Length: 110
Image (cartoon, rainbow, N blue to C red; front, side, top):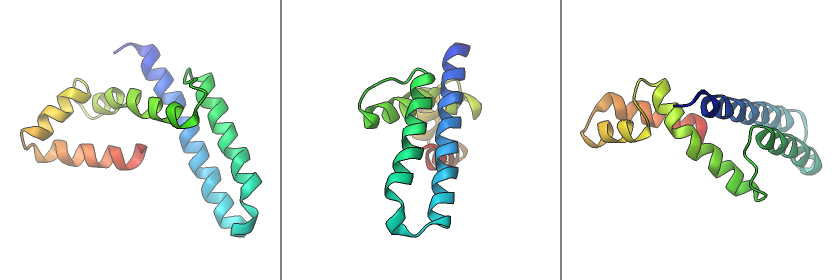
């Protein structure tokens, strides 16, 4: 897998993680009726960071979907598989460890 793809995915993951942290702080520090503008601001920061990483679809749902799709092979490689197809093949064969690996990563990155 080209290093450029891994770097792009790592940058996107970092942007999503920063968003999640800011989101959690926002919901901890402010009453629900004050989230609107502040939430939009942290969301816009994440979108700009994703764009800087090369995820540029103008529709934010599609931009996020591209992050998840491209990160699949990187996720699998980090778990010791050749790529996402290799991980799915192990799951289909009934490999319990592969199934647990897949569940853990999907929970974290989706």
